[in-house]
Image 1: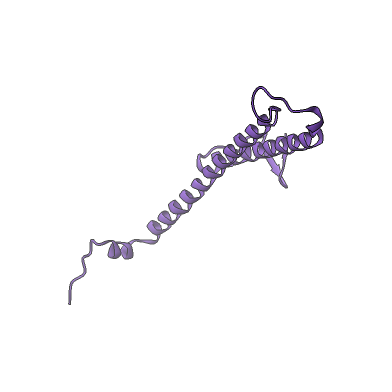
Image 2: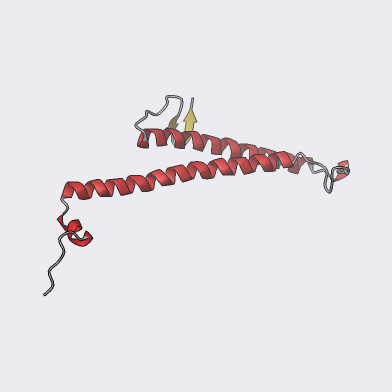
Length: 127
């Protein structure tokens, strides 16, 4: 029968104590959570940037080129207002989410404190 190498990864893993195992698990869990928090913040920042671009592009009333203008009778003022409001509210809500995520990130991963101006109760920001 072949002798097992006591320096191999499998045997070393079996010989670890509970403290080492808990530390490894904690590090893996914390790393996963950290990545998800960072990714969520980046995704929201990108979403806001795209919403702002769409909102600004809606101001371009030249349908085909810089020399043409939209005829007043073709302009849908109600549709423009509804889209502008929807995008503005989306930007505002996502900005609040980013502020909360950043505050929680600092608290959870950097040892910071939650700023007093960001207190969340039932999903509503209090100032």
